[in-house]
Amino acid sequence: MGHRITVLGTGYLGATHAASMAELGHDVLGVDVDPGKVAKLNDGEVPFYEPGLQQILQAHLAGGRLRFTGSYAEAAAWGDVHFLTVGTPQKTGELSADLTAVEAVIDSLAPLLTTPAVVLGKSTVPVGTAAVLGARLRAVAPAGDEVELAWNPEFLREGFAVQDTIHPDRLVLGVDADRPGTAERLTREIYAQLLAEDVPLLVTDLATAELAKVAANAFLATKISFINAIADVCEAAGADVVRLADAIGYDDRIGRRFLNAGIGFGGGCLPKDIRAFMARAGELGVGHAMAFLREVDNVNMSRRAAMVERTRLAVGGSLLGARVAVLGAAFKPDSDDVRDSPALNVAGQMQLQGAAVSVYDPKATESCRRVFPTLTYATTALEACTRADAVLVLTEWEEFRQLAPESLAGQVGARVVIDGRNCLDPARWRAAGWTYLGVGRP
Ligand code: UDX
Image 1: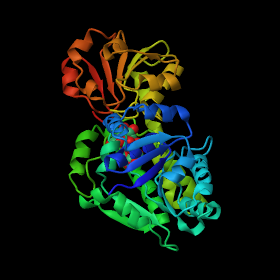
Image 2: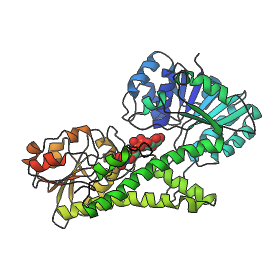
Image 3: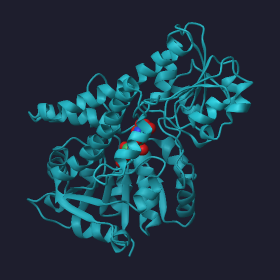
Image 4: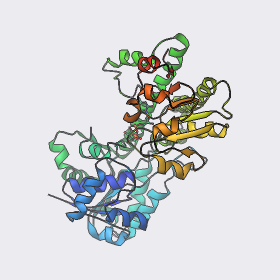
């Protein structure tokens, strides 16, 4: 049985959630204050690259199960379940999260709720936010205490957003223990198809649900910085971090995933979420317990400087006038997202130190141009590598794994390849006459 639901905010999370809920059989109204976004989505256009999303968006627009609007009045009238999916970016000049958009959604919706309704928050927020928003909602909504707020955090990964929404590892629902309502029943109905497939649903209090999301991201970030710290030790000791990760990864308690050393994590989530987590822990007076997260962040950021330094040494001691090819700019492969991208950061730093940097990315060139218009963008990997003094692979796109070192050799100025993601086969590149430098590899 389909529900009439709204999805408030149609960025990465919201657009994916709206289309995925239609895919699960619901009648969905997506709402956004940006008329440009609404128009694009209604035309079946996804404003970012996400495999599979465009297809289900278009299918459900055509089938009449999905529509987008700018009107909150329409949203309030549409259904009784409202998903809150706006962004919570890092505040400028501070570690904490900017809740302006979340609060704006609550303030726009609340006065229009004249009948019982459930608001399900999905955005990543500092612990304690849901309780405050719930009170704010009940105080303003004409339906008062019959409006319920619960938290259903989202764990999706970019590049697998649709799959992660429709086949998640688990669902988490935080409910207000002091005012039991219909949120759990409605959530079970909305996700009935997933529950039937044995996806676990963990019902918790609000704070636990909010924290589960940031704790998951903090753990993933810690895992990456851990292996990057080990990579430094490997380099000093002449060991190979890739084989080491294989060796420890066979232990189920450790696991091989998220143990790839390289230039570290970036993107729209991990960096800002761990910072907001540190800031919130500090506010709660338990900053000391989270102090290691600062180190996780430090280790991660230092990878970028280390890659610039490695390149400087590889091109003979000075970046000034050096020609550097950068392959990959997105924060991870199969994405056009360059938010806090380590690859783009490294490219930018080298350019600012006087190198002539030519960047090639299979999908992210347009997003790069917007944030870093002064870099040179090539249209093929080969073009980027022309007469290069060093070739840097900074995002592990499949296209770069497949590069033939023999044919690239004739194109470059010097056969130096720096593998910032340990994604190339060192033996193959060396056999073709290249100097191969990985991260944490002999
Ligand atoms: C992440 C979380 O995985 C997801 O659960 C959460 O909801 C949002 O944040 P995403 O931002 O899509 O998702 O990226 P993810 O695939 O987790 O990668 C994050 C960054 O870590 C990338 O820059 C990636 O290159 C880097 N990474 C990942 C490593 O450096 N090493 C690894 O072993 C794994």
